[in-house]
Length: 418
Image 1 (cartoon, one colour):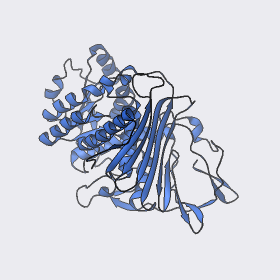
Image 2 (cartoon, helix red, strand yellow):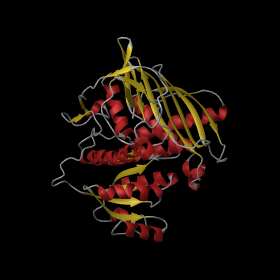
Image 3 (cartoon, helix red, strand yellow):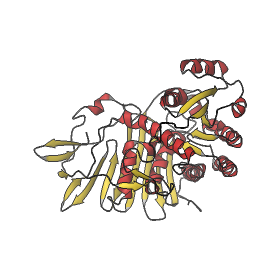
């Protein structure tokens, strides 16, 4: 729980050292972590205001309103008589089997009509497990298959651009798992294909769709925290068995920065409303993987004068995951995992945290569903596109600058980051 109550006073409890991927049941127990800070605060329940979607994500059709809560712009719209979208999924690896297929089979507005994987026998086994009616023997079969409007790309990073571009050019909307590409040049190719075809492409950046992240963003939007000047985010995982392709830079484009760090980078840029990054500085280590970075510590300096620090690792000598995002403004601060918002008023700290009781695992799994709901509403024309190919180009420019900074051991200035 974010706070513990004792004798009418409220005390801070530290963030549990768990990643949302673990979903440790102990996090849900009352008194999971002992309170270590003694700041006394009083708690005020504040209603959540109504916001137009542009305040959170972009500029939707005029007059579209969404509550500033967990379901901003992600609600299932018009389920009765709703158009169902046929989805063809490419790649049947870990993320496809553990996240995408279970989710897509639950969504009433989609039907998974086909699978493709270079390993045909694996694709057939997965299709049988998830009751998918058709397995393509060649990728090109999907382009002419009747009833396919969306292609879901869950392959290794090196194949993302080629598959995404081919799908776009054959008139399909595309959802592609992060990262979109291994480089700025590859991301730019995809962005040009999106502009050329007029189809929608969304990159899987699910952390901005975490219910707690969306709620925290609403506090930022309505000015509860004042001007944001510092964000500190991290995702630190203990040593674990390596996924082989993730440690091959020719396939993945890098190491932990391209896996965990890019999600933290996106979350930070989103919280800062994609303000221009002036320069970056990074240090990277290869303690376990040897061939790609498995620990990154990065600092981003924004043109506005604001700062962000990011840290991510696959290989720290610690027993549990730690995931967090702390935001500091001139009027208050906000925290993820667990969620809390605190302001300073009349000489004391005041919690304005809205009531939410959701486990770390629920936050993480729910983010994928909300992300897909938003994407489907984008395809319908109800909400504006987000996490686009253009945003991916912007992210990759920063990522490449971070790699350069670590290699040269000095700050790198971005000439045009906006």
